[in-house]
Amino acid sequence: MVAVTIRNLSDEAHRALKLRAARHNRSTEAEMRAILEAATRPEGRLLLGTALREIGQKHGLTNTDIEAIEQTLDARPAEPMTFD
Image 1 (tube, helix red, strand yellow):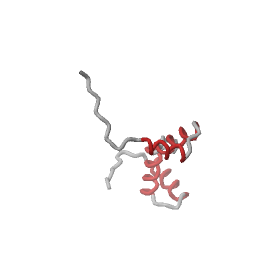
Image 2 (spheres, helix red, strand yellow; image 1 turned 60 degrees about the vertical axis):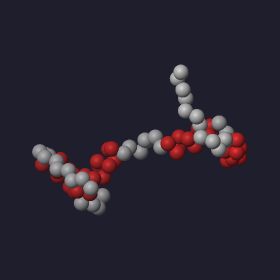
Image 3 (cartoon, one colour; image 1 turned 120 degrees about the vertical axis):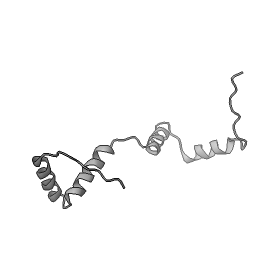
C-alpha cells in the first residue's frame, strides 16, 4: 500500500472531513480513502465483459451460436500477415 501525505489542508476542510467520517461511522483516514476511491473509480466505467454481453444481446447471440462458432474454428494458429 502507498502512503500519501496531504499538506496545507484548511482547518475547515479537515473539520468537514471529520464530520463526514462520523456520519459514515468511520475514521477520518478511512473517509479520505473512500473519497479518493470513489473519485478515481467512477461507477459508470466501461467493463469489457458487460460491453461484450450487451453486444451479444443486441444482436441476439445465444450460447448455441457461440458453440457453433467454436466448432467451426480451425485448431491451427492463425498465420501472421505479410506485407510483401
